[in-house]
Length: 299
Image (cartoon, rainbow, N blue to C red; front, side):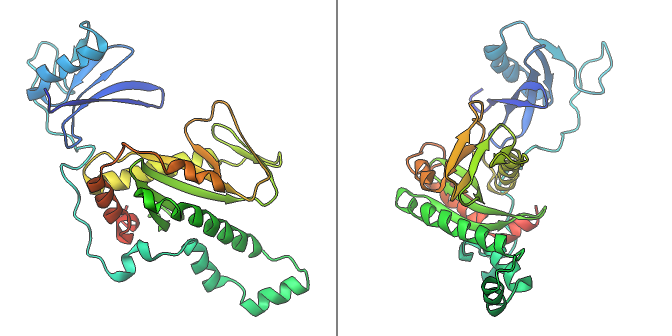
């Protein structure tokens, strides 16, 4: 029984307990409200039921595997596709250009500005003439990412690693990825110079304006990061979303906001003392995976 673990899962209005092998493969699961247990791997039925009864009590209902007829002995179904790999997925062949550790803060913005933005002379002319430019917001965002990167660099003596401009296979990029003893943090930087910001459960408002889905997007990004890292590492990787606001005059958090960490840039140091989520060996492995560009582009 020591090889099996029970993991709670809540999503889309469901409340379940999953019984998993050490490699993450699910052998059984239970619906908490109804106490109905589904066995996916019959050879683990006895051990799985014993574990689930510790959480649900002795009164549980065993549901036959899908496809079994009433009164028929439950046959072992074809093994389902595992939720996680039985071991770490082999990394694609890397080149020097694939190493995200070489990325500067704001790498995606730097690349976009270099490809499509105004030349330094053109930008200077627009500023002298005081003509608005759509690119100014890009430069503001770039400065915000650089300021946050300087705060993150202060955490290195505590064993933290940081990556910048991590590309996502589904588009866009992750501003900063912090990896260390306290787990992994997917950091989204928002630069609103001189603004007042309020952050709720899913939305944020800048100077009382229209709501923006900052918190919801940050949670989705963290879930994406966790899926990529766990697929290639072969073990559970805790990932938390973080929103960092740069240059704001005030920052207010809703009392119910606890799923996303909300900081001003100088408060990022609060992550430094966190420990107990990843071992030194796991940090090395997660960092080795995360710095590989093709891991993200193929996901």
